[in-house]
Length: 311
Length: 274
Image 1 (spheres, rainbow over the protein chains, first blue to last red):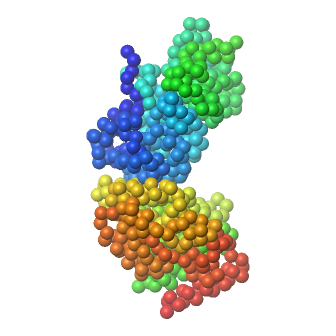
Image 2 (cartoon, rainbow over the protein chains, first blue to last red; image 1 turned 135 degrees about the vertical axis):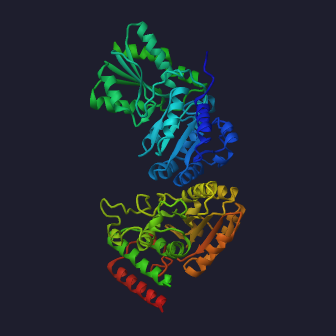
Image 3 (cartoon, rainbow over the protein chains, first blue to last red; image 1 turned 90 degrees about the horizontal axis):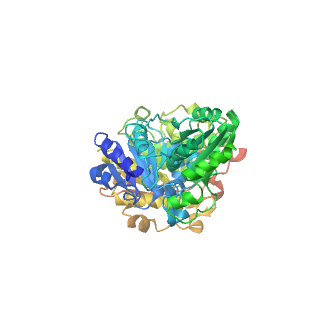
């Protein structure tokens, strides 16, 4: 049965539960409580919530001020605005000042579909990843998202998380979701090709592995939810055991996961690396699924590219 | 009791030495903001080197981060770090860079890019309210800084949440790097602007410690809204040829200018000591 729970809802549920006993948790929104699925949190913990209005710069700075005074601040706002409108606040007040702020970029990537480039965040890995002391996480499904938020509550360092707007099909199950902080999850192991994916691209990549298996091609699939710090050892190991490397991301090819993987592979164990991504241009109009289909970011598209790469 | 006006000229001399040695710094704004910092650090704020991790300490943010030399002079004089450290200001590998950095004892937040401090202060004030602590939060901004839109996002939030534990100070020296603020981007009508955002607006002579002290006391007594103190200062205050000259925003004195400035500051200090 199709999953109906979006990752953003999982973040809300974890925070509702943890905030029952941890009074230092504070969630902040910029008129984004509905789109962040935070309405239930606000109802449950009104005293641990701050609304700043449509003011993303203030959202991030206020979060940093709270964090500097001992709070665990979670700022939830559309990824497109959080990563660009308030980039300087993320850089100075969060990363550079080293405050305990978790920036939750909701409706990330092309989730907002036909709303256009203003509402897409196809550059956030490049933007946030280039800031020293900022970590970047893009979880693949609801189970991993839960583990990630729980792990982030255990440390006091800045982080940016991107989640999509829509429910995504499960990659893992509640009982079988291996998770180690800052270590890629090995979804499958093979010897022909290494596929490295993050976020919503992990599920089609997982399906592509099955399609490839039917063609007699064995593939490793790394779920690189920890885009930064990237799990270098896992990339090297996967590449060393394969003939070529394919990366898949809901992001421009400039400064994204593929670029990071290519840097590692070219330096450590040279193999051909091909990147499947969004273009350096506004994407075509459509819902996420249609946009992914147009750019070949589907199970079939990934399998086809992998097979082609091995020819 | 220590003569704080005399101290203000003593610490301006420390700033002069730092900038002259390093050949970099923002002397005009350092000299205009000095009395505001001295009033806060010697008369108003509950801070000390022993309290840097005390959850009840008052919080200070120098949002006009380029006046960091003045802050360094004050913090070292209050014992947050050794005075000798100032000799490394802006030198190779020094942690004492040209803007505030919280790797330095006594500095809460990194600043330097204008327009961030007020919203950070809003967050600190909200945290104090949530935790039922009675510390106060002070944010010092420049008047040119008020052109940053993000300042007004913070002003809006401060007014909305009626943060009477938050006090902003505008170092209103009427000059910025390109000239008079009123020519670059007009900032008169501060009363109307802040008032309409729900703030209590006070004015004070900004290079007068007694007047500033009185204003901070009034701010503390004001309940139900945050206070902004418009501190009417003179840029470059204390040295005749530096005062009110936009070019001295970040000019470095020549050897002759250094000698002359040092002489004037010594005279002003002696006068203050009576």
